[in-house]
Length: 205
Length: 205
Image 1 (cartoon, chains in turn green, brown):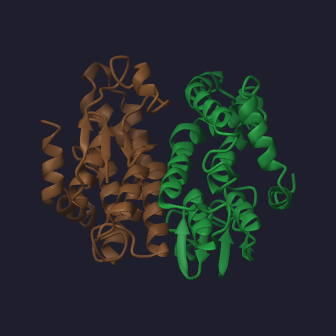
Image 2: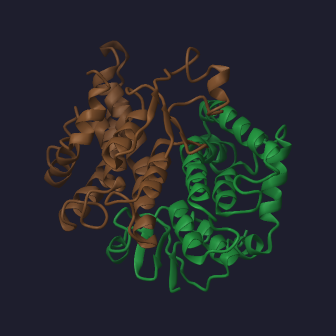
Protein backbone atom coordinates (compact mmCIF):
# COMPACT_ATOMS: atom_id res chain seq x y z
CA UNK A 1 0.00 0.00 0.00
CA UNK A 2 1.07 3.54 -0.75
CA UNK A 3 -0.16 5.91 1.97
CA UNK A 4 0.24 9.62 2.60
CA UNK A 5 -1.30 11.18 5.71
CA UNK A 6 -1.76 14.95 5.57
CA UNK A 7 -2.06 16.91 8.80
CA UNK A 8 0.06 17.77 11.82
CA UNK A 9 0.18 15.19 14.59
CA UNK A 10 -1.57 17.70 16.86
CA UNK A 11 -4.66 17.50 14.66
CA UNK A 12 -7.10 14.65 14.08
CA UNK A 13 -4.36 13.26 11.81
CA UNK A 14 -3.01 11.62 14.98
CA UNK A 15 -5.85 9.12 14.58
CA UNK A 16 -4.55 8.03 11.19
CA UNK A 17 -0.92 8.03 12.27
CA UNK A 18 -1.87 5.74 15.15
CA UNK A 19 -3.86 3.48 12.85
CA UNK A 20 -0.96 3.16 10.41
CA UNK A 21 1.37 2.23 13.28
CA UNK A 22 -1.12 -0.35 14.60
CA UNK A 23 -1.68 -1.84 11.17
CA UNK A 24 2.04 -1.96 10.42
CA UNK A 25 1.60 0.23 7.35
CA UNK A 26 4.42 2.35 6.01
CA UNK A 27 3.31 5.90 5.30
CA UNK A 28 4.50 9.32 4.32
CA UNK A 29 3.51 12.03 6.77
CA UNK A 30 2.93 15.53 5.41
CA UNK A 31 2.38 17.71 8.50
CA UNK A 32 -0.04 20.24 7.02
CA UNK A 33 -1.07 22.87 9.59
CA UNK A 34 -4.56 24.35 10.03
CA UNK A 35 -5.67 27.44 8.18
CA UNK A 36 -4.33 29.79 5.51
CA UNK A 37 -0.73 28.58 5.81
CA UNK A 38 -1.74 24.94 5.36
CA UNK A 39 -5.16 23.34 5.06
CA UNK A 40 -6.69 26.39 3.32
CA UNK A 41 -3.91 26.78 0.75
CA UNK A 42 -5.03 26.17 -2.85
CA UNK A 43 -2.75 23.17 -3.32
CA UNK A 44 -4.21 21.50 -0.25
CA UNK A 45 -7.79 22.40 -1.19
CA UNK A 46 -7.18 20.32 -4.30
CA UNK A 47 -6.66 17.37 -1.94
CA UNK A 48 -9.37 18.21 0.58
CA UNK A 49 -11.78 20.89 -0.65
CA UNK A 50 -13.12 21.13 2.90
CA UNK A 51 -9.85 22.75 3.90
CA UNK A 52 -9.46 20.45 6.88
CA UNK A 53 -6.89 18.00 8.11
CA UNK A 54 -6.47 15.13 8.03
CA UNK A 55 -6.73 13.88 4.51
CA UNK A 56 -5.15 10.71 3.20
CA UNK A 57 -4.02 9.34 -0.12
CA UNK A 58 -4.41 5.57 0.05
CA UNK A 59 -3.23 3.88 -3.11
CA UNK A 60 -4.33 6.90 -5.13
CA UNK A 61 -7.74 7.31 -3.49
CA UNK A 62 -8.08 10.58 -1.61
CA UNK A 63 -10.13 10.39 1.56
CA UNK A 64 -11.15 12.86 4.27
CA UNK A 65 -12.84 12.28 7.63
CA UNK A 66 -10.33 10.79 10.03
CA UNK A 67 -12.48 7.92 11.29
CA UNK A 68 -13.57 6.91 7.79
CA UNK A 69 -9.92 6.90 6.74
CA UNK A 70 -9.16 4.52 9.62
CA UNK A 71 -12.00 2.15 8.74
CA UNK A 72 -10.67 2.13 5.18
CA UNK A 73 -7.06 1.52 6.23
CA UNK A 74 -8.12 -1.39 8.43
CA UNK A 75 -10.27 -2.91 5.70
CA UNK A 76 -7.39 -2.73 3.24
CA UNK A 77 -4.74 -3.95 5.68
CA UNK A 78 -6.73 -6.78 7.25
CA UNK A 79 -5.51 -8.43 10.43
CA UNK A 80 -6.92 -8.40 13.94
CA UNK A 81 -7.88 -4.72 13.93
CA UNK A 82 -9.97 -5.13 10.79
CA UNK A 83 -13.51 -6.52 10.60
CA UNK A 84 -13.62 -10.29 10.24
CA UNK A 85 -17.14 -10.22 8.77
CA UNK A 86 -19.71 -7.88 7.30
CA UNK A 87 -21.44 -7.87 10.69
CA UNK A 88 -18.27 -6.77 12.48
CA UNK A 89 -17.77 -4.14 9.85
CA UNK A 90 -21.27 -2.81 10.43
CA UNK A 91 -20.63 -2.57 14.15
CA UNK A 92 -17.23 -0.89 13.70
CA UNK A 93 -18.79 1.71 11.43
CA UNK A 94 -21.65 2.14 13.91
CA UNK A 95 -19.33 2.79 16.85
CA UNK A 96 -17.26 5.21 14.79
CA UNK A 97 -20.39 7.13 13.77
CA UNK A 98 -21.61 7.00 17.36
CA UNK A 99 -18.38 8.58 18.61
CA UNK A 100 -18.87 11.44 16.16
CA UNK A 101 -22.57 12.01 16.82
CA UNK A 102 -22.63 11.43 20.58
CA UNK A 103 -19.19 12.23 22.00
CA UNK A 104 -16.76 14.19 19.85
CA UNK A 105 -18.23 17.70 19.67
CA UNK A 106 -19.20 17.86 23.35
CA UNK A 107 -15.90 16.36 24.49
CA UNK A 108 -13.94 18.86 22.40
CA UNK A 109 -16.01 21.77 23.69
CA UNK A 110 -15.39 20.60 27.25
CA UNK A 111 -11.65 20.35 26.63
CA UNK A 112 -11.59 23.84 25.15
CA UNK A 113 -13.55 25.49 27.94
CA UNK A 114 -12.05 23.57 30.86
CA UNK A 115 -8.41 23.39 29.79
CA UNK A 116 -7.27 24.84 26.47
CA UNK A 117 -8.68 28.37 26.27
CA UNK A 118 -7.26 31.22 28.35
CA UNK A 119 -9.29 31.48 31.56
CA UNK A 120 -10.98 34.70 30.51
CA UNK A 121 -12.42 33.02 27.42
CA UNK A 122 -13.81 29.94 29.14
CA UNK A 123 -17.59 29.72 29.32
CA UNK A 124 -18.99 27.79 32.29
CA UNK A 125 -22.28 27.38 30.38
CA UNK A 126 -20.45 25.40 27.69
CA UNK A 127 -18.84 23.22 30.35
CA UNK A 128 -22.21 22.57 31.99
CA UNK A 129 -23.95 21.82 28.69
CA UNK A 130 -21.17 19.55 27.40
CA UNK A 131 -21.07 17.66 30.69
CA UNK A 132 -24.82 17.09 30.50
CA UNK A 133 -24.62 16.03 26.83
CA UNK A 134 -21.91 13.48 27.60
CA UNK A 135 -23.70 11.85 30.53
CA UNK A 136 -25.83 9.46 28.49
CA UNK A 137 -23.25 8.36 25.90
CA UNK A 138 -20.56 7.80 28.52
CA UNK A 139 -23.00 5.61 30.44
CA UNK A 140 -23.65 3.66 27.24
CA UNK A 141 -19.94 3.20 26.58
CA UNK A 142 -19.26 2.20 30.19
CA UNK A 143 -22.08 -0.34 30.12
CA UNK A 144 -21.00 -1.81 26.81
CA UNK A 145 -17.33 -2.17 27.73
CA UNK A 146 -18.18 -3.62 31.15
CA UNK A 147 -20.40 -6.26 29.55
CA UNK A 148 -18.26 -7.04 26.50
CA UNK A 149 -14.87 -7.88 27.97
CA UNK A 150 -13.48 -4.39 27.64
CA UNK A 151 -13.73 -4.05 23.86
CA UNK A 152 -16.30 -2.63 21.50
CA UNK A 153 -16.46 -5.34 18.83
CA UNK A 154 -15.30 -8.93 18.58
CA UNK A 155 -13.65 -9.33 22.00
CA UNK A 156 -10.39 -7.83 20.81
CA UNK A 157 -8.79 -4.42 20.18
CA UNK A 158 -10.01 -3.21 16.79
CA UNK A 159 -10.13 -0.08 14.71
CA UNK A 160 -13.46 0.67 16.44
CA UNK A 161 -11.71 0.92 19.81
CA UNK A 162 -9.02 3.09 18.26
CA UNK A 163 -11.58 5.41 16.63
CA UNK A 164 -13.70 5.82 19.74
CA UNK A 165 -10.65 6.19 22.02
CA UNK A 166 -9.50 9.08 19.82
CA UNK A 167 -12.71 10.93 20.72
CA UNK A 168 -12.53 9.98 24.42
CA UNK A 169 -8.97 11.43 24.23
CA UNK A 170 -10.55 14.90 24.54
CA UNK A 171 -11.78 13.93 28.01
CA UNK A 172 -8.32 13.08 29.35
CA UNK A 173 -8.15 16.14 31.62
CA UNK A 174 -11.81 16.09 32.65
CA UNK A 175 -13.30 14.43 35.68
CA UNK A 176 -16.02 12.73 33.68
CA UNK A 177 -14.34 9.32 33.67
CA UNK A 178 -13.83 9.23 37.45
CA UNK A 179 -16.86 6.98 37.95
CA UNK A 180 -16.32 5.05 34.71
CA UNK A 181 -13.79 2.29 35.51
CA UNK A 182 -14.49 0.28 32.37
CA UNK A 183 -13.88 3.28 30.10
CA UNK A 184 -10.76 4.24 32.05
CA UNK A 185 -9.30 0.74 31.83
CA UNK A 186 -10.13 0.46 28.14
CA UNK A 187 -8.76 3.92 27.32
CA UNK A 188 -5.57 3.46 29.30
CA UNK A 189 -4.92 0.07 27.72
CA UNK A 190 -5.42 1.57 24.27
CA UNK A 191 -3.04 4.45 24.94
CA UNK A 192 -0.44 2.10 26.42
CA UNK A 193 -0.14 0.15 23.17
CA UNK A 194 3.29 0.55 21.54
CA UNK A 195 1.74 1.87 18.34
CA UNK A 196 -0.18 4.50 20.27
CA UNK A 197 2.93 5.60 22.14
CA UNK A 198 4.90 5.82 18.91
CA UNK A 199 2.21 7.89 17.18
CA UNK A 200 1.39 10.18 20.10
CA UNK A 201 5.11 10.91 20.57
CA UNK A 202 4.87 12.72 17.22
CA UNK A 203 2.67 15.33 18.94
CA UNK A 204 5.67 16.39 20.99
CA UNK A 205 3.66 17.06 24.14
CA UNK B 1 -32.30 -11.24 5.39
CA UNK B 2 -34.42 -10.62 8.44
CA UNK B 3 -34.75 -6.90 9.13
CA UNK B 4 -36.60 -4.87 11.72
CA UNK B 5 -36.43 -1.07 11.61
CA UNK B 6 -37.37 0.68 14.86
CA UNK B 7 -38.50 4.30 14.76
CA UNK B 8 -41.37 6.36 13.37
CA UNK B 9 -41.09 7.40 9.74
CA UNK B 10 -40.90 11.03 10.91
CA UNK B 11 -37.58 10.29 12.58
CA UNK B 12 -34.19 9.43 11.09
CA UNK B 13 -35.68 5.95 10.63
CA UNK B 14 -36.96 7.29 7.28
CA UNK B 15 -33.40 6.89 6.07
CA UNK B 16 -33.45 3.17 6.75
CA UNK B 17 -36.97 2.70 5.41
CA UNK B 18 -35.89 4.37 2.18
CA UNK B 19 -32.74 2.21 2.00
CA UNK B 20 -34.77 -0.99 2.46
CA UNK B 21 -37.12 0.07 -0.33
CA UNK B 22 -34.18 0.90 -2.63
CA UNK B 23 -32.42 -2.36 -1.86
CA UNK B 24 -35.59 -4.41 -2.33
CA UNK B 25 -35.36 -5.75 1.22
CA UNK B 26 -38.42 -6.93 3.11
CA UNK B 27 -38.58 -5.49 6.61
CA UNK B 28 -40.71 -5.17 9.68
CA UNK B 29 -41.31 -1.59 10.74
CA UNK B 30 -41.82 -0.92 14.46
CA UNK B 31 -42.76 2.78 14.66
CA UNK B 32 -41.18 3.62 18.03
CA UNK B 33 -41.75 7.26 18.98
CA UNK B 34 -39.22 9.57 20.64
CA UNK B 35 -38.97 9.88 24.40
CA UNK B 36 -40.49 8.28 27.49
CA UNK B 37 -43.37 6.65 25.61
CA UNK B 38 -41.02 5.02 23.11
CA UNK B 39 -37.28 5.31 22.67
CA UNK B 40 -36.66 5.83 26.42
CA UNK B 41 -38.80 2.89 27.56
CA UNK B 42 -36.78 0.11 29.23
CA UNK B 43 -37.67 -2.47 26.60
CA UNK B 44 -36.36 -0.19 23.87
CA UNK B 45 -33.25 0.78 25.83
CA UNK B 46 -32.41 -2.93 25.72
CA UNK B 47 -32.30 -2.53 21.92
CA UNK B 48 -30.65 0.90 21.79
CA UNK B 49 -29.19 2.01 25.14
CA UNK B 50 -28.80 5.49 23.70
CA UNK B 51 -32.57 5.84 23.79
CA UNK B 52 -32.70 7.07 20.23
CA UNK B 53 -34.38 6.02 17.03
CA UNK B 54 -33.68 4.50 14.64
CA UNK B 55 -32.25 1.17 15.60
CA UNK B 56 -32.25 -1.90 13.41
CA UNK B 57 -32.07 -5.62 13.85
CA UNK B 58 -30.36 -7.04 10.77
CA UNK B 59 -30.15 -10.82 10.89
CA UNK B 60 -29.84 -10.70 14.66
CA UNK B 61 -27.26 -7.92 14.81
CA UNK B 62 -28.54 -4.79 16.53
CA UNK B 63 -27.28 -1.54 15.06
CA UNK B 64 -27.83 2.14 15.83
CA UNK B 65 -26.78 5.25 13.86
CA UNK B 66 -28.99 5.60 10.82
CA UNK B 67 -26.24 6.12 8.24
CA UNK B 68 -24.17 3.22 9.56
CA UNK B 69 -27.26 1.02 9.36
CA UNK B 70 -27.67 2.00 5.71
CA UNK B 71 -24.04 1.27 4.84
CA UNK B 72 -24.49 -2.13 6.49
CA UNK B 73 -27.76 -2.87 4.68
CA UNK B 74 -26.18 -2.01 1.33
CA UNK B 75 -23.11 -4.12 2.02
CA UNK B 76 -25.27 -7.10 2.92
CA UNK B 77 -27.73 -6.64 0.05
CA UNK B 78 -25.20 -5.91 -2.69
CA UNK B 79 -26.37 -4.54 -6.02
CA UNK B 80 -25.82 -1.13 -7.61
CA UNK B 81 -26.31 0.87 -4.41
CA UNK B 82 -23.61 -1.09 -2.61
CA UNK B 83 -19.85 -0.57 -2.90
CA UNK B 84 -18.27 -2.51 -5.76
CA UNK B 85 -14.82 -2.37 -4.17
CA UNK B 86 -13.04 -1.56 -0.93
CA UNK B 87 -12.18 1.83 -2.41
CA UNK B 88 -15.83 2.61 -3.15
CA UNK B 89 -16.72 1.47 0.33
CA UNK B 90 -14.16 3.83 1.82
CA UNK B 91 -15.59 6.73 -0.15
CA UNK B 92 -19.19 5.87 0.74
CA UNK B 93 -18.28 5.77 4.43
CA UNK B 94 -16.35 9.03 4.02
CA UNK B 95 -19.31 10.86 2.48
CA UNK B 96 -21.65 9.51 5.14
CA UNK B 97 -19.31 10.70 7.90
CA UNK B 98 -18.91 14.02 6.10
CA UNK B 99 -22.67 14.55 6.02
CA UNK B 100 -22.78 14.03 9.78
CA UNK B 101 -19.78 16.19 10.65
CA UNK B 102 -20.28 19.00 8.14
CA UNK B 103 -23.98 19.24 7.31
CA UNK B 104 -26.46 17.48 9.58
CA UNK B 105 -26.39 19.47 12.82
CA UNK B 106 -26.32 22.88 11.16
CA UNK B 107 -29.01 21.91 8.63
CA UNK B 108 -31.28 20.61 11.40
CA UNK B 109 -30.73 23.76 13.48
CA UNK B 110 -31.60 25.89 10.47
CA UNK B 111 -34.78 23.89 9.81
CA UNK B 112 -35.81 24.23 13.47
CA UNK B 113 -35.21 27.97 13.69
CA UNK B 114 -36.47 28.94 10.24
CA UNK B 115 -39.47 26.64 9.91
CA UNK B 116 -40.38 24.18 12.66
CA UNK B 117 -40.36 26.11 15.92
CA UNK B 118 -43.11 28.57 16.82
CA UNK B 119 -42.03 32.04 15.70
CA UNK B 120 -41.47 33.26 19.26
CA UNK B 121 -38.90 30.52 19.85
CA UNK B 122 -36.86 31.05 16.71
CA UNK B 123 -33.40 32.50 17.20
CA UNK B 124 -32.02 34.57 14.31
CA UNK B 125 -28.50 34.03 15.69
CA UNK B 126 -28.88 30.27 15.17
CA UNK B 127 -30.10 30.87 11.63
CA UNK B 128 -27.12 33.13 10.90
CA UNK B 129 -24.59 30.77 12.45
CA UNK B 130 -25.99 27.67 10.72
CA UNK B 131 -26.09 29.46 7.38
CA UNK B 132 -22.44 30.44 7.82
CA UNK B 133 -21.46 26.89 8.89
CA UNK B 134 -23.14 25.38 5.84
CA UNK B 135 -21.53 27.68 3.29
CA UNK B 136 -18.29 25.73 2.90
CA UNK B 137 -19.67 22.17 2.87
CA UNK B 138 -22.45 23.06 0.44
CA UNK B 139 -19.83 24.54 -1.88
CA UNK B 140 -17.85 21.29 -1.59
CA UNK B 141 -20.92 19.18 -2.37
CA UNK B 142 -21.91 21.41 -5.30
CA UNK B 143 -18.39 21.25 -6.73
CA UNK B 144 -18.14 17.49 -6.35
CA UNK B 145 -21.53 16.73 -7.91
CA UNK B 146 -20.93 19.17 -10.77
CA UNK B 147 -17.61 17.52 -11.59
CA UNK B 148 -18.64 13.88 -11.02
CA UNK B 149 -21.69 13.43 -13.19
CA UNK B 150 -24.17 14.22 -10.46
CA UNK B 151 -23.31 11.40 -8.07
CA UNK B 152 -20.99 11.08 -5.09
CA UNK B 153 -19.31 7.75 -5.82
CA UNK B 154 -19.01 5.48 -8.84
CA UNK B 155 -21.04 7.49 -11.37
CA UNK B 156 -24.31 5.99 -10.16
CA UNK B 157 -26.88 6.43 -7.39
CA UNK B 158 -25.51 4.67 -4.30
CA UNK B 159 -26.14 4.42 -0.60
CA UNK B 160 -23.76 7.39 -0.24
CA UNK B 161 -26.12 9.61 -2.25
CA UNK B 162 -29.04 8.33 -0.19
CA UNK B 163 -27.25 9.00 3.12
CA UNK B 164 -26.12 12.50 2.20
CA UNK B 165 -29.50 13.38 0.62
CA UNK B 166 -31.14 12.47 3.94
CA UNK B 167 -29.11 15.23 5.61
CA UNK B 168 -29.68 17.73 2.79
CA UNK B 169 -33.40 16.92 3.33
CA UNK B 170 -33.31 19.32 6.30
CA UNK B 171 -32.57 22.16 3.88
CA UNK B 172 -35.66 21.59 1.74
CA UNK B 173 -37.41 24.76 2.95
CA UNK B 174 -34.29 26.92 3.12
CA UNK B 175 -32.97 29.20 0.42
CA UNK B 176 -29.46 27.80 0.68
CA UNK B 177 -29.72 25.63 -2.43
CA UNK B 178 -30.92 28.49 -4.66
CA UNK B 179 -27.45 28.99 -6.13
CA UNK B 180 -26.56 25.28 -6.06
CA UNK B 181 -27.99 23.76 -9.25
CA UNK B 182 -25.97 20.54 -9.03
CA UNK B 183 -27.16 19.84 -5.48
CA UNK B 184 -30.75 20.71 -6.41
CA UNK B 185 -30.73 18.41 -9.44
CA UNK B 186 -29.12 15.58 -7.47
CA UNK B 187 -31.46 15.98 -4.51
CA UNK B 188 -34.60 16.20 -6.63
CA UNK B 189 -33.60 13.15 -8.65
CA UNK B 190 -33.00 11.20 -5.44
CA UNK B 191 -36.35 12.17 -3.96
CA UNK B 192 -38.14 11.36 -7.21
CA UNK B 193 -37.03 7.73 -7.09
CA UNK B 194 -39.94 5.32 -6.61
CA UNK B 195 -38.35 3.87 -3.45
CA UNK B 196 -37.98 7.35 -1.95
CA UNK B 197 -41.59 8.20 -2.74
CA UNK B 198 -42.79 4.96 -1.19
CA UNK B 199 -40.77 5.48 1.98
CA UNK B 200 -41.48 9.19 2.42
CA UNK B 201 -45.22 8.52 1.97
CA UNK B 202 -44.98 6.71 5.33
CA UNK B 203 -44.30 10.09 6.97
CA UNK B 204 -47.82 11.15 6.07
CA UNK B 205 -46.90 14.74 5.34
